[in-house]
Length: 286
Image (tube, rainbow, N blue to C red):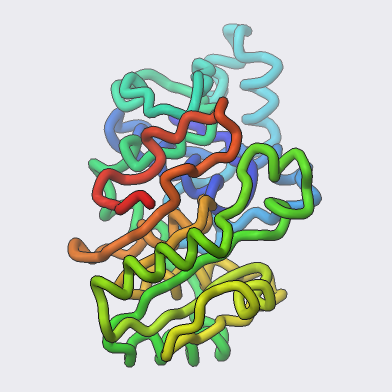
């Protein structure tokens, strides 16, 4: 059995799932999710159940067997979860030894690199298909994206990156000058681009992004279905992403081999966070 601890926002939950799923497939073991941290999180919602994922949550009894009784012979006999060895992420850079795991393991970490699951990319994209139909407002946006000659998603992450001093010190934000440079670069590649702007602060984007002939500002919905916005981004031809895991997945889920993605070269403001393996090699760093 492979178990992934799930915590954090939507993007982080997806990284944790993708890594565990890849390990389970490579080692031919069953795959389960530990949602105990999500049940205590008052700020973030569990979103993986909105996707067609291939994993069930641990029961409370299975979680207790691992956390309290995994060294007891009877528990190890009765509960596969109790046989799992704890595997903790040592740091942000890709750890290739994770892909060689062959024994029951309990994965603790964020695993923010496609290197953990690129071998099974099509499986991961299939698992992250939406389980339910788009809402009417999002269906309207999807129609516009599909009708566009060259739809380019632009994601602007603000929220706690701005309001929370500790979070801001770690992540920082992409400033207007960066977006101006990124959009200018994208315009040099696609003369007929039509921009679709996604943000948790859409009024800021209206005031601070440079103006282009075709811009659609996608209003955020307060319905807990933000992963549908992620899929709208994935439906675009190209992407300008923020330093956000949500933004990352919006681009990565696009299966096109010829997509163009522009990402911030400095993913973290904090110099102690090493993002060398976070941005896929095929993406343009700016």
